[in-house]
Image 1 (tube, rainbow, N blue to C red):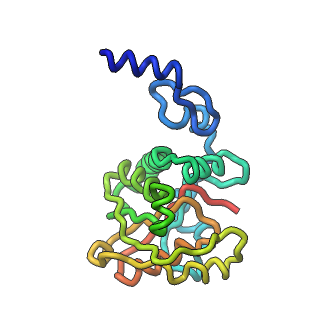
Image 2 (cartoon, rainbow, N blue to C red):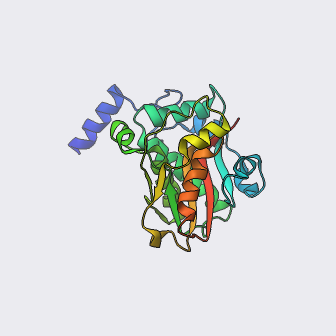
Image 3 (cartoon, rainbow, N blue to C red):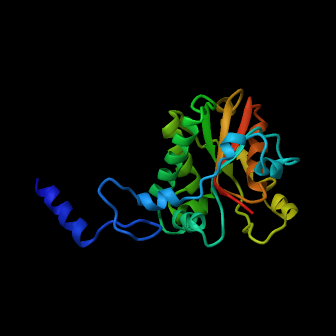
Length: 230
């Protein structure tokens, strides 16, 4: 009882606020308020997962089947703000929450038995140590929880690379073409894998990861990202 009183007191003095709009959160809200959740630019890529403009970006890069994104990315929009909070404001729980929301959306659309496991795009060890977590992995854990499957670390980033910002499609591919290595082939061989990342631009990073996994002959690889856009 004393603990509850203390918790209530702290919530009055230091109320939890929405990560996007800074409104005070109700007790039933977590990380995001209902207003911001309703305003998120959710896409329908999962409904046309094998024939959309994201899939077109991967043509010639990797033979993946489905390509999806939870949110439409726009500069200075809610999706960019969300990504900034997740990557640079120490918000792993936010990434997991958004993954959980997307996972439930995929489940409602009939994807609950589509994959055997989820594999996140890895960070280089040094960057993970600095940030404290891998935002793509947290996003993947959220999806996995909703779908009732495992999110596994089956890729290693063995080189730190330059930022992909302002690079051309070809330069992005050259920058990441040989930096990923697959781990534990038994967890890959014959499996239906959902490869997840935080954002998709040219698709070079995801394609490189897919090629590392394809060496161990999975049955199928699909892609899902938190946000994608022009």
